[in-house]
Amino acid sequence: MQDFHQFVWDDNLKRDCRTLVKLALAEDLGGEQDWTTIALVPADRMGAANIVAREPGIAAGLLAIPVVLAEAQSRLHVTTFLDDGQHFAAGTKLAEITGNVRDLLTVERTLLNLLGRLLGIATLTGRYVSEVAGTGARIYDTRKTMPGWRRLEKYAVRCGGGSNHRTGLFDAVLIKDNHLAQRSGAAVGSPADAASAVQAARQFLQSPQGAAKQQMLPVEVEVDSLDQLAAVLPAGPDIVLLDNMPPALLREAVKLRDQVAPHVELEASGGVRLETLREIAATGVERISVGALTHSARVLDIGLDWQG
Image (cartoon, rainbow, N blue to C red):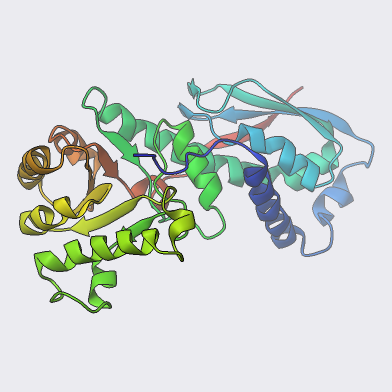
């Protein structure tokens, strides 16, 4: 099957970055000025500073630095020393910024806040990806992102070696228990209910209303029991999400899938932690989705160190 859209740094990400920077600068400046800097720093003072990592991590968002400086209408120039996706050690100089000191002091917090969050997501993702190395399982993000930050956060997941799940409600059919509870048809909660929903989704995509999306939208369905899995596999989903199943049950699910519909991919989701990740990956599932990559990533510790 064709996978979900995988993010790279492009014009769409630049647009999102500009929007966030505008909001951040408006929060910081309130439509006025950085009065502390204006009061204390000469208007023509020039200088240089390095963005330095205080701890090891994985680069993400360095391509956003020129966007931040441009949106702030600064008189600054940046040189980056790593590519997004590269690992670095504590003390690594990530970038050098030169130019007007007033401008750099004014944009400093916005820049560090943006970079710290993206670096933190990439670094946490890298830990999850390393944990499943050699198993064949892939780590996916979710839609549990900060409002307005989704594309940038998913890009950071990619920098960390992870894969992107659906971007939004528009680029996949993902049938969950709440959808089943609100539709007519088979008895809600029965194994046949999820199967009939998959069939209904396929019929919709073959209809005049859905035909334009037929080849573009993967169909995924959530199940929480082996009975549900056995019912939905013949219905033809692309992916089955195995919700909150312990490793023993995941292994049984993989065996059942291999017997009935080996082309269907299985996704483990719910309650995934680093401590349990390796055991989950060893069950044979192809996908593991982890909301924590974005909703629980710690901001990476970076700082601005002045030269001279």
